[in-house]
Amino acid sequence: MPRTVLVTGGNRGIGLAIAQRFAKQGDRVAVTHRGSEVPAGLYGVRCDITDPEQVDAAFGQIEAELGPVEVLVANAGITADTLLLRMSEEQFSSVLETNLAGSWRCAKRAATKMLRARWGRMIFISSVAGLSGNPGQTNYAASKAGLVGLARSITRELGSRNITANVVAPGMIETDMTAELPEARRKQILGEIPGGRFAQADEVAAAVGFLASDEAGYITGAVLPVDGGLGMGH
Ligand code: NDP
Picture 1 (cartoon, protein in one colour):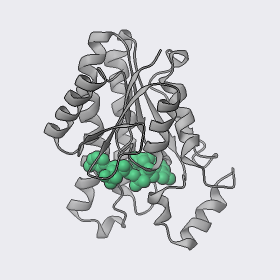
Picture 2 (cartoon, helix red, strand yellow):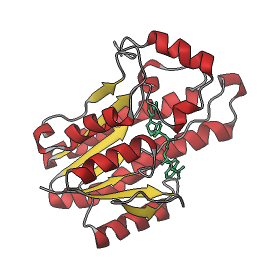
Picture 3 (cartoon, helix red, strand yellow):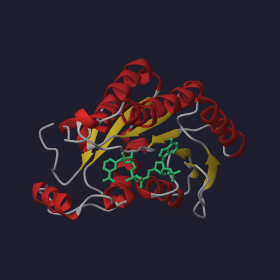
Picture 4 (spheres, protein in one colour):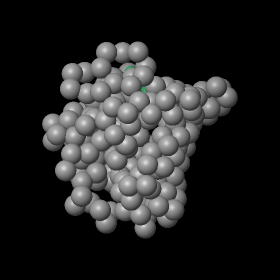
């Protein structure tokens, strides 16, 4: 059955691969953007997830055009890497505000309609860094670890209403975000990945597609790594 899907940050990178996968299987797919072009076949809503009013307006627009959001993929995220002692209040709070509070805000807004429908799927895009930590990413790792507590609390609150909340924790994926890595750091990380390679965004999209499916109805509060074994044991 076709669903209405919202992928935050679905205009590029991992979010775009996720959005395109849902579109390909016939779902009605909305993506947020902040002024960029929206790829063909997707319904774009302008929305900065740090602004509660914009989030509410975006959901309203999607509800009017495509119907209530049945599958939420909270994917939008940023980094502002630097070592703990050099990190500013701004670098910490902006990352937390986008990655964690922005996801919470979207989940809260989506839950209203999911509760009414007694069906819903929430998928939060975390990171291997949220589970194992990473030097230079105290802000980012804390925000991504927070998504696990968020998803699991939602699971306990809404689990009995056919609403699942899961976390996907990607490792190293080829996108603009990882393109910024210095070559030496890239090589070092590559040596630590049992799978011996970075992944394509499609490989994350496949995991998200599964968690959103009817078949995954009994999987909730789970953390699914897509990391070539990089974060094993966490
Ligand atoms: P990109 O940097 O390629 O894309 C980030 C996306 O988030 C863009 O669509 C961007 O929109 C959007 N975004 C950022 N801030 C906001 C905001 N305030 N409001 C709305 N949208 C916003 O990232 P990736 O595709 O690499 O990453 C996607 C997710 O996966 C992130 O949460 C990231 O932390 C996570 N991840 C990525 C990994 C990787 O290896 N790449 C590994 C592990 C996790 P805009 O185009 O307007 O800037």
